[in-house]
Length: 418
Length: 146
Image (cartoon, rainbow over all chains, first blue to last red; front, side):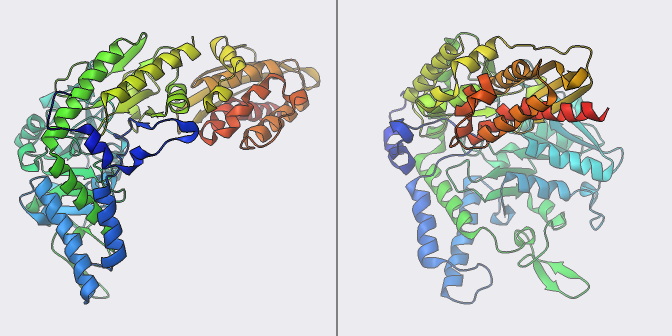
């Protein structure tokens, strides 16, 4: 470790899962945080305490528990607003996950009940994404294009795994650009601010999928110059079932509601309704209360550790991993082989060995948990002419020793298939 | 080491040296099956001769060692037998794969395919082993419809 302020062994003690063993006494080497992260006691305890002592519904119950639950739920919104530098807490919309946030956004366009020109879309209009997106940032836009007759366009990806950024792809007909901040396969960090500037110049809106960046780097939504930012709780040491859509207030106000139901209304008659102001306009029904509170605790935890320190630690791990994987014969890295503009996600193939076999043997013999497959980014794998990759993704609790275990495992895999 | 029992030498042999691989003419039916969760795929052809004798099973595919070795073993076990005989092998193989590792394989019926018994303990991998076998069953049915 280069950083003296970051004590990974102390961090690991916060995560009870690292005190368990796998069957047959194998140690757990968890290198799958890009898929979902583990949870610290600080999050587990807050959720348990809320369920045990404060739980009731939020926003409507006129009793002590209702007030405590509402305070905690809305307090979580304040924490998230602070965590991502949102200018206003009302701009933080709780969703089920990042996928729901992106669907909410996609369904805001081309709604006949909404005439705001920024959200109208039809034949001749364009939606721009990239080839390195997660399916959740492709499929909702394909569906929008199918509903409205708009055209879906995309930036390609270079052989090195960088965004093949062509500003001219964004035109006067572009309504929305939606790209990932950090690729969940390549680790590549995209030049979001530059793309945002071009989108705004063309009169388009821009959304950023920050699911893989918010957990790992200090992210300030105002600094990104984006109109919308989405991310999910379970990848940032928080629980599953809770995600976030941040949007500029005036845009959220101009958007039609997505789901109708309780809590999102102002008044209801049998033939019509008026809607609550943001954020509640977009939070129909009883929300994931304890999950939101857990996400607030996750933001507190990461703030306490310090995202600068997390980022520096992950950088050390990534440098170590890139160096170590270079020593593995017949290994092809899919993604940048330098530390520049890249996060702690490393994907690769081993010649002649299918990733499912790699993952199975790593798990069975060494307790190394990686993800294998197309990682919900099939178009990206097609781009590289491969059906699947093996992906190791690191987080604040990982160690260089665990990367050694991965490399030992890979050598064994090659021995089995030699 | 659980995995050791799954990656039997025989499976690895078939993966490294697949038998009967490649698509050949003539054929009565061709099918394409995919496993959407992992992207494994197989294109498989069957040629049935007189008295229901399987003259050739040819295939091309991509995927993990389990799925590819299973196709190779399938080729060996089916070619030269009758449709009826092979379908009973398919049934026994399916029964073994779906037995969660708790049923005894009938080596008389399955021959080399018993090597896949260990796969049955891994629910996520069972469909890898079954991919080509289900494709074969489908192809045989279609060839009969001609």
